[in-house]
Image (cartoon, helix red, strand yellow):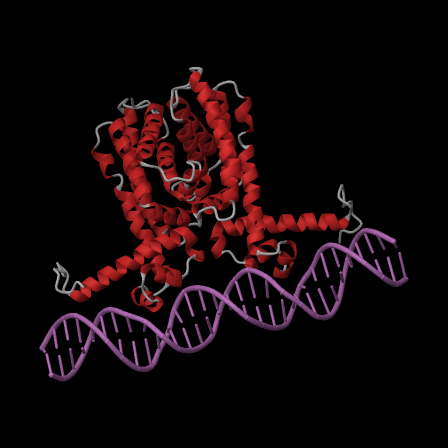
Length: 215
Length: 215
DNA sequence: AAAATTGTTGACCGGTTGGTCAGGTTATGG
DNA sequence: CCATAACCTGACCAACCGGTCAACAATTTT
């Protein structure tokens, strides 16, 4: 129904487009199913149904269930890391940490499945991304800790332990994704609306920034 | 090796003792395996091996895998609720919330498996304890929120949103259990020692209590 | 236009899993 | 000491799951 439409923008043609689209469909479905059932509870058949493709087709694009899972985890990890881009350019804690909190909350709101997959992966001992934790994440974390320590040395915030401050921000923001179901249940069973997400943002910012003496 | 020792205290004899002991063994093994592999990834055989019992014996005490899982989840939920016992008797936020943070951190430290099972259960939509969330947990939460609001009204702390403060405490403390592997990896691969757990406690207490103007 | 490459899929398979059960052992009450 | 009930477990089974493959369809290249 769509072979004469204007497909094939930049790739090399229809083949490229088909591959891109199918991989996207599969990864999207996989992210959701892995998040809702865990790696062990997820089945290729359910992912296939969710993606609207035959199971054999999944194995054409991703050799094994683990390969597919690995790709899902890496995708969310990339998003996770980029949330701190605004962190570095900031001049003071209120701006930098405030922006980071906002960015992390955006992820919790718009990538709840990915966040859960990440949480699940770490909870189970990070079997597939342990190397990332030991290299990329460790370097990344040390960098932010150094930045926070600089602010402390400059007298721009109270002398709290940068590492645990970092963990607290991670935990507080991801809670709204990973424990989203609990939050929703305690919100009369309804998802948070725009106004409530604003309240979340303000609450965390207020407590954290005041807590580190950055206001 | 122990049949003439002073067993059978209050139950009705050896039968009672055997049942109690085997159920304990199974639940302990199940908690660990469910935590490390998730419900879907856990197998009755692995739980049996961990408990040192034949698989068929597990099904003698717990009809199905789900029954066993349900029991594990309920156990940790009870512990979780009781962590707030010191909350109510406190006169001011610094004491009450401080004690609650300590209690929650103790759980993270001494019941990491249970904490992970709980997190996993909620992340997957609370399939087996949804009713508890809607009744017990909801009532419990409303009660604490009211207590915090009272402190605010009495001018003992800043007017922050009690609900999101609560979530922040949950998140910050559970992080050290649920994301314990990540914390450990970022700690040169070593578990936190006594001194470091003290630092965690002090960091969270300091930031939260100052953040709500309770110091 | 035909050859080659890439994409598609129903049917199938070996291995694993939760759960069953029959036949046994051990404890308890009378 | 016997009868009953509780406990134990190796062997077994049906269902399911990840993964394979052969045959076919569509697209691209020559």
